[in-house]
Image 1: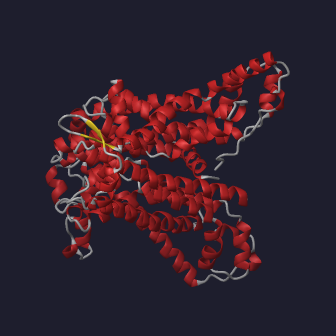
Image 2 (image 1 turned 45 degrees about the horizontal axis):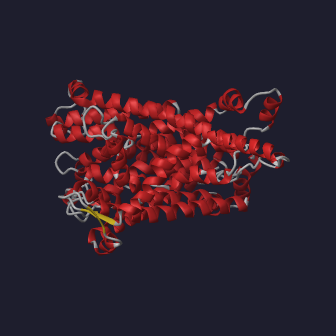
Image 3 (image 1 turned 30 degrees about the vertical axis):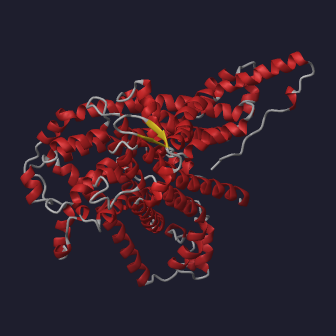
Length: 317
Length: 289
């Protein structure tokens, strides 16, 4: 990632001799700002400002009936830490992250390695495209689709389980407090692994083929090559994917809203949906903003980790 | 690992090991099985759109007895056509705004003597880190006070604002790799910065701009959070939200819901297959080289 390597082209030519020409240069330099002004205004106003404003709102409480806004300091935050649903939502987000790392990072890596092992280029492109298809489709569609698949009466899953002789274990996956979140996470793995597999195939293609030739000469088998060449040579991509996956797991919203709405009994609530529930169903904007701050802290830490990781990579190479 | 490299080295060619052949067979069957797991649900969705409710209940795996388009027609007339129009408007308008502003910004951040450049780069690209969920509460009040709540403008504005950082990042990375001699030569010939942008750099950036457009289509066509919060009436809702309201109204007419889902998924799948090359370039540039 070409993050912050800035080509500094400004310089000595502006060191004007007379005050007049210095002002002229200053004016010229200010004029250069026209290049970033539109982005500066739009991004500043609609991306940065709301986040600052969110912190302010999080220290207030609005009376639903009178509409009066009251300053309550950190009260929303103390409430946050004693709210059981917040903790279970946090646990669900974490669960989302861990399971996604297993399947969408390491699972996808293995799938990518198998794809790249195929001899026909056509087949390699074919599989990689096939697995990617669900990632291109909106999560509303895939969520609704799996809502039906998990249904006990018309659901595909129950039918498949019956065929496999597991019919006795079938149940209303989304209607059970113990399984709802896992069912949703399962859908998400189905949808997302092809995206990371695609990125991994590209990373694997960049590994010099001589390494594999040399390993084969030394009598290394396929598994040994996977472990000693492919895995270390794609380590950067893996590290990056882990960070991106964690960030994504803390922003999950769409699939939960479509499949369970956070239920049953708040068991599949995540931070994003709990924010929505508090702010937009219960009209408790101050508390919703406090949940937003929590999401901000987690995602920003992930973002900084990503920045640190890419910078470190640049230094190493 | 790749087999094609073995071929020229006849001298070193190992004897065919039966375990290797068995292993390859197992791995390839795994790929096929995984392919079925990925594609079958989507096929089931599209086929169920042709079935009656009884067929969906009683014979989930069977092909439709008679291929009836009535569910697709019903879905289209019960609001999907409106949602498609909304999605098209929001996607198209936000593409134009996002790509134009991002290309303009990327040029400024790579090829001008703008003061405070490192800070500006950090500011614009730093926006990528910020999550839309966190901004939600204040944004609702802002959109209401602008009077654009429940209009397409709210979505166009927000999609543009939240995608400028990423799009600028992609275009900027591409522009950094273009030779700076081009600008020098043009400047010698008396071209202004605006002309260098329009006549030299922008045309050269065409491949990455195509990638940006495709990634933006994918984003805007599928976006749910903002669409759900900022639109509420049937004629402003885009497809992802429209689908959920169709579901709550006609949820028991399964054929119709499946048809609506298929209509919403199909365009993006087609676009993906037609533009794979650009798609993949955008994704890989975005993830680091």
